[in-house]
Length: 359
Ligand SMILES: Cc1cc2nc3c(=O)[nH]c(=O)nc-3n(C[C@H](O)[C@H](O)[C@H](O)COP(=O)(O)O)c2cc1C
Image (tube, rainbow, N blue to C red; front, side, top):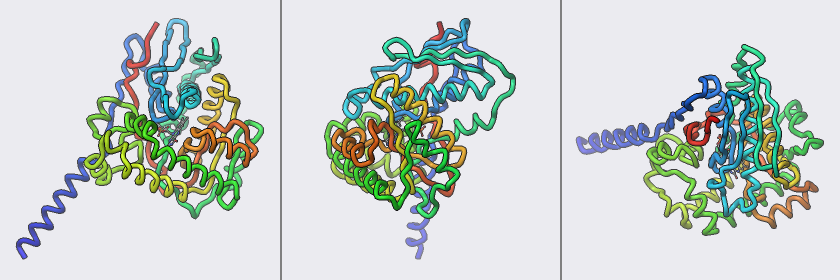
């Protein structure tokens, strides 16, 4: 009897320890940039909460506060050479950053004017303060938006009202609802492409280099995909960190687990949004901008989003989808749906001074 009591106490203590160790990491991004006023620091931090492929945060900023403008360009040292050899996602991510930053300026009472410049390799953004009113609602929407990798509620579909602003084909945004044959096709092509990538050694090695396997690694790097970015929390997070590392993440059992997770994600959704645009750098930046514009509208309505790029990253799957759906140059596939609670952005973001220089 005494032994049984002892075992129960030990198990409970272990569970409590695992739970405490598994609590959400707070990377406490340092917003300080010498010679920049606090409001600009806040705006630049808010802008950095933009969605971006693998959370690589591949942007570099030069800011000229005396002249009220900044430039945003790619940090090519952060490229995803294997899954994104033509920098398609890099430019889309840059566009996501630009649009989030524009919205952040607007929330703090600034007007902005952007220009995609010189071989389309950087964006110039002018800003001027025109109002003292701070739009707290917009700030909370930008802060709330995040990628949700959980399965969504299959019993609640996207309503007519939301459908009307999502499905604006004239600006290259298309919606496919569960029950439609085309929805099934997007689902099956995505799973097949993911499966092919999961067993590809080069793809696995690249992904593994951006996965983080401890709070320490997340705190040191402040980028990439720690458990929080994968939607793993609490005891599951601790077990994940205890059982996985950069080497095992390139192995077969990790691949199998990823396929199961992806299948659950695809089963748990009620719609796909497709965004298309021409493949040039400029159009890809614009594509990222319109994606964020839509994503923030969806966030306002508490519709959860997960981009699923696997089928676009594999030429043959992308071609099949483009042909069967009759949509040229598919750039983003977003899995959308509702969850009981919208959840929070993990806010794994680098210190501003790491990529912002003041001129
Ligand atoms: C161009 C692009 C492609 C992406 N592809 C995927 C993807 O295939 N699978 C996925 O789970 N998330 C994908 N994401 C989401 C990013 O992983 C996510 O934005 C990033 O980790 C930052 O997290 P947050 O959106 O929660 O702020 C993509 C995002 C962008 C902008």
